[in-house]
Length: 185
Image (tube, rainbow, N blue to C red; front, side):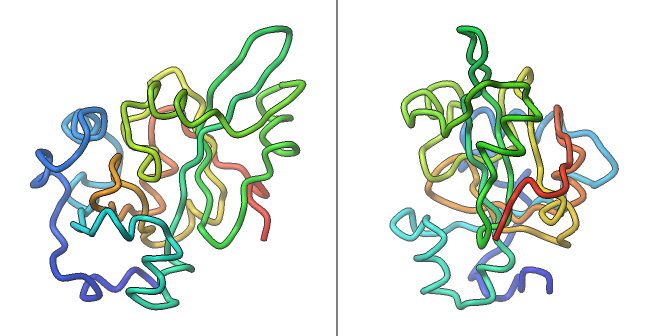
């Protein structure tokens, strides 16, 4: 089931709301390429106090949990070097950081990146990190279920607002690799 657009007061193309987005996200939308038109990426202005998925589900209904995706930043370490990467998975699942992510990145150890590092390196707010506008050199790992969903509700780069992004567009973002089994229930 796609995200019911009428569940929110106002849904607009994100390119019409660039002033409400963080600089990296706005810049990425301005430079958008791929088979999905940028106008299909939508913005929903939401209360920052309910930015977390559980609170959004409580306010808008249980359907939202199946139609939401999270973007988490991981730090993969090998031989004294740390590689940051982002992972996208549906909100009702969790990213297999120590299995699939670690192996895919060829790391000895992988864990969630410290909040200050994730926020500082992305230029986005904690709780709103999105795969749109990430640093170009970062690997972006997308769970196949997130890439297959018609639309996913996810962070917009800040705690204010959410993006509604076609799953196909997630698979086409710069640096994206779609992985089966990246997320587990």
